[in-house]
Structure formats: C-alpha cells, structure tokens
Length: 615
Ligand code: ADP
Ligand code: MG
Image (cartoon, rainbow, N blue to C red; front, side, top):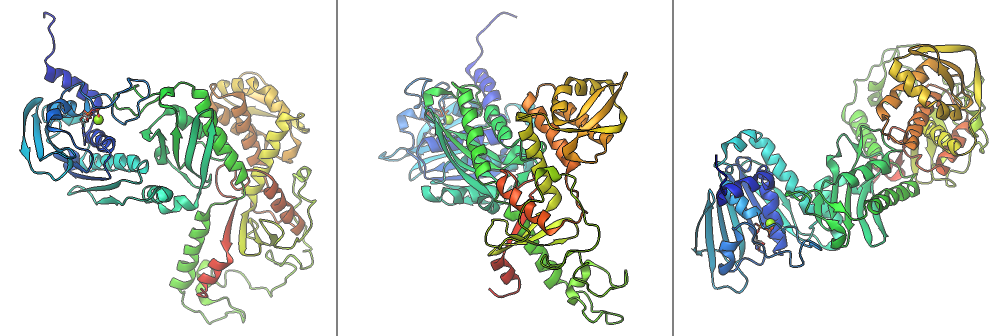
C-alpha cells in the first residue's frame, strides 16, 4: 500500500486513544477545562456510566463566538503562553475537545463574559456543525453523548456502567480536593449524588474530610515544609490509620492531581518503619514547585510529572513526614478508642443478657456484662486482691512467681513503681488485665497499652540503634541448631552473615540447603532459633536483592524484635509496667508496633462520663 497522509479524523481518533481512555478521562479533561476557565461552580451529570451521557456545566469565562470553531480543532489552545516551560494551567495540549469530538457526539455551548448571547457548535464523529445561536446565560455547557460509538473496539474494553460511574466519581473527588473554593455537583441516574459545597481557603480541611472521610482529620497531622523553592503542605495520616491500598493517597503538584511514582515511593519510604509493607498510609499532599522545574508533558493524560531535581522532592517528602512522625510519636489513633466506645455501647447497654439467679454469687457482675463470659464455667473463688491479675498496683505483690522479662538489658526494671498519674503522658500503670494489657491512668483519661506491641517496638528501636554502635552481645547455644532451608534462602542468609552477626545472630552454611546457628542475640533471651532464622529468610526473600542494606537491616531487626518481645500472656510487675510506659514516652514512633498497629489507646474521662450518661 502506498504511503498517504491520514485524515484529520483518523489523527484525532489516534490521539483520542491516549487522551480519552474511558468516560472518566472525558470528565477529567472537561473539569480541567472548567477550572482553567476560572469556574466557581461545576455541575456534572452522567448516564450509563458516562457512556451514554456526560454533561458538564460551568460558570467560567466562556468562549467567544469567533473562537468556538478553534476550541474543537486539534492543537488549538488559549493556554501555554510561555511555551512548555512554566505551564500553570491544567490543560495545555489543545487536544481534549477534538479528541472527544472524534469518538463521540459533542455539543459545546458557551457564552463569553460580556457577549450578547450564547452559541453552540456540534462535532459528530469529527465533523463540525455550527456555530449557531443557542440559549445559555453564561459560562460553558458541554455535552458528550454516545462515547466511543465511532470506535466499537474501545467500547468493548470498557467496564460495567457501575465501574465506569465509580471511576468518574474518583476523578471528581481527586480533583475537588485541590479546589476547595469551587462547588462541585455530580449527579445522574447511574449514581448517588456527590455535592461538595465551596469552602473558604482556611476551611480547606473540610473539603478533604468530605472526600477522604471525617475520621481523617482526627487521625492526621499537618505538613508544612519547604526546601530550595519546593514547598510541601497538606495532611498525612497517623501510622495506625492505615488502609489496604494506596488509593487513599492524594498527591498534587501545583494543584494538578498526579499519580507520581517518585512521590508515592517517598511516602512509602517515610512510613516504612511504622507500617507493615502491605498496608498504606492515607495522605493529601500538595507540592508547590516552580513550574519551570517540573515537566508535566510526560504523558497525554498528564498524570505523570518529571522533576528537575527528583532527589530534592523525595527528600522533602520523606523528611517532612518523618519529622512529624517522630514529633507526634506519642499520639495514638483515636480509631481504637472510637471502636471501644461502640463496643461499650452495644455490649453493655443495648443487649442485656437475661439474669440468672440460680447459684449466682452474692457479688454478681451487672447482668448486662455477663455476655462476655459464662457463669459456672469454673468455681468462683472469693476475691483475693493479692492474687487477682487485675489487682491494684498498691496492693502487696503477688506471691506467685511472676514473669521475669527476658530483656532486662533494656532497662525495664529501673523506673519508679507508681508515679503520680499527671506526671507522664501515658500516666501511671494501675493494673494488668488478660495478662496482655496494661491499664494506666492519666489526669483526664484511661490508657490501655498492648504490652507485646509496645515492647516489640522498643526492642526494635534498640536493635536498630545498636546497629549504628557496637555489635550486640550474643548467647552461645549449648547445641548448635541445624535449620533446613531452600538453597536460595541459604544463599540470602549467608550473604547477610555480617549484618546478622552484628545483631548477635551467628550462623554459617551447613552443607547444601541448611545453615547452622551457633549463637543468638542475647537481647532476645530464650528464642526458638530455627523459627527465627526461617522468618528472617522469608523477610530477606520478600525484601529482595533490590532493597538497600538499611532496609534489609530494618526487616531483620523487626523480625527479631517480634520473636524476643514480651508476649501477651505474661504477667508483669508494677515497676516493669511503669518502666515500659516511661520507655515508650522516650522512644520515637512507639505509638505503633512494627506492624503499624497502635500500641495504646486512650479513652478520655469525658467519654467515659458520656458512656454513663453523665454528659
Ligand atoms: P486545552 O485545555 O489543552 O487548551 P482543550 O481541547 O481541552 O485544550 O480545549 C481547547 C480550548 O477550548 C481551551 O484552550 C479553552 O480556550 C477552550 N475551552 C475549553 N473548555 C472551556 C470551558 N469550559 N470554558 C472556557 N473555555 C474552554
Ligand atoms: Mg483541556
């Protein structure tokens, strides 16, 4: 076949393949146009997941009659005055409207400010019709019908109406966060309406809450940092406020929503220490960069950007989040406490269990509490404060052989037995319940501490710290343990032998597919060496060869910490409990365990009073 020039329509359809991938991309382009036109109100109506109808109405500057035909022509734009350097508008490529017009029925109605009347231009399958007079009081109204009817192949790849409709919602939510001063209304027969009233700049967090959820504001910290002309603002969630996907990370560069790998990986790096790898923080980050220092012309969909100095941007994001995490280390999530409140409400108040009189002891618990355990399960002994696991701490010490923490080395026994409750953020330990939780009291709250989670974090931090100082002491095994593994695992372990030795874990290759463990870290006390080694091997496999030494070391430290920590089920003495609380107050990041779960939750006295109807 001879070489020939493609028709305009075909060229537009090819471009459309990149710009308009699905109905949500049409909505994105049209909303961006409305925002670029300075709109304060944007209304979006969809039908059939956006396939049959997308209508966007704005109160922006409008398009003068003479420019209407240009607006729908390829490579025509009123933006990008300064060339590709320094783009300050959301659009700049001049291809959205012609692309949409080539694969759908497009109608563009507009009335420029000060113009006598409105005009309409139609584009059907790439062919223009008009402009002719039309009715519109101001701004621009764009209607897109039968999207992709001209390219059935594309139509086949679209998802269900429900999925396409959800994708549209997501696009609107994402962009709306960056424009709190603009009112958005998204309605249609295919959805439940989303209405976001305009809010003042100072109340921008309201817009964020409306989109990310109300609990975010209570579980996030503000960011405000700058470095060499790059500025970071926004909010990032506490480590205990994590989600199963990175969907809840909203990142903007100069107001443009982006899915930028560099920034997403910087976020991951900032939380690497305080969150399990399969969980994701929630955050809303706004980066301001000199437009000349960022290239937004990387992909037609404009969701990728390239920074002139990626290291600077990464360093700013990681540094700012980490600094706040360290500063706020003692702020736990209120999510746990809220859940607790709900439990109290439903468990105690809403579902009273039937009262059983027969054989009930004189001091029967309130009937409603009984749902949590069965009577008559075991003989009820008279209450002996000295033996009760929940005995008050001022009571004489129990006579049973209490737990001696294996990790004495980290100073658990040094703190005063029972400090005044107002003295410390985590208060004074009052009791231990379920052999797993410490109950502490501050001036205005009740604090519940997960002893295993808290201790694990402290051991982890001690291990990491030790890595930068001298090697940790080890403890020789009486009989060296041989651990069978796959050859690949053996190789990974042997490659890290020097690192492991610094932690006090001495192992060596023992023939094919096995290692021999000779010494284990003294800090961990009695430890199941084969289990520890297998888990470290797993960690190394997951961390992969690509991970830096620092990251691998952290993984190993985390695995070790988990093995050596005060497990739930051990009874703690009062001084041990208080020592644990004091250590937590000193160690950054101790509000969450290594897996990102909270180590403590706090219930305010005011909330307790509310539970009893006193407020
Ligand atoms: P781009 O946004 O990259 O310039 P588009 O094809 O999206 O390209 O739009 C072409 C032009 O049409 C814009 O540059 C703008 O001048 C005009 N335009 C499009 N939508 C609107 C709108 N809602 N309000 C005012 N002008 C608009
Ligand atoms: Mg545009």
